[in-house]
Length: 356
Image 1 (cartoon, rainbow, N blue to C red):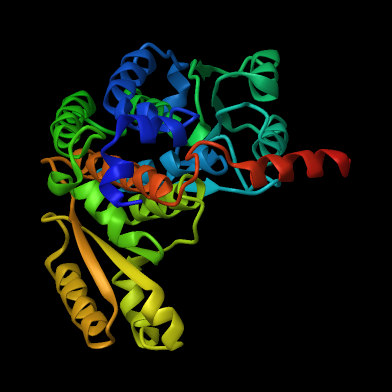
Image 2: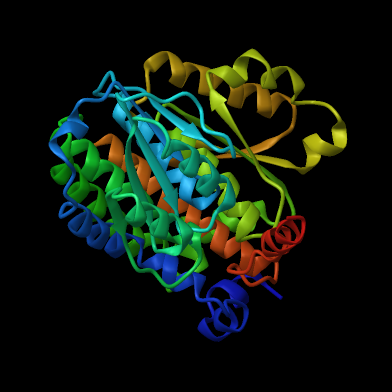
């Protein structure tokens, strides 16, 4: 079936998108605004300002927001952020803010590490819709940001990121966050007008890129704050499009990956590289990107560029996230799969539950 017949036909999209992923992607700007307004009402004890570092516990879709937050905070604050994806807790002390983020509240790695954290003097916070995490938090007097969202955990990106930004502002770690949030939402809304489902393939950059990625092995390149956005693209393509994808960070990739572009020939013919671009990148990083694209061309590997939009780093990150979410959604339709279900992950959880 021609690509336009799938991507431009509302009935064709509805037949494949049984889980409503298109609606979830479309509503990300509104979700971010709602999450920001709710998160600003979260009250934390005054002594939570007395911290030297932040440790965020999370997995999958709940963890990506912490990754983006880490890079945003690093631009204006010396407090480091460690994103921890394991069962056991890393070292924390009384000057650590320990944040457990789990959409369901039942992510076993996060619940395990958070449970260990209860015995430490770390300051604690939970971000969740409920589950064991919320029960444990409330049972131990831990502040919690509780939200409601009907959909896939990875689609609740706004509810993962906005509470972290609100906490950073409330603790005096970031300034002007509200201004940046509004600018980022406006930038996403403007971008949505150009890449939404109802914009035809002939004029839609997201649909066009998805068409170029169909049947290929996507490799997403990012730098600085867009590094973790590239990570988000990778996981969205994995989960929504049900296909392999990888991501790389510049300039690090030019100290290793650049050597490997030509071999094996089968991989070189299959790979398609997407560069997430920003006019705010360090000029030397921009040069790294230019050289690696030239090297790709010499190796006969196709690539494309996606320009992040907006003034602030937050707007750049969120517009690039929105583009990636739309691309992965469209690629899923081209692959003939429902973007929402993640059956192997559900199977894993059921299997792990049987091993206890």
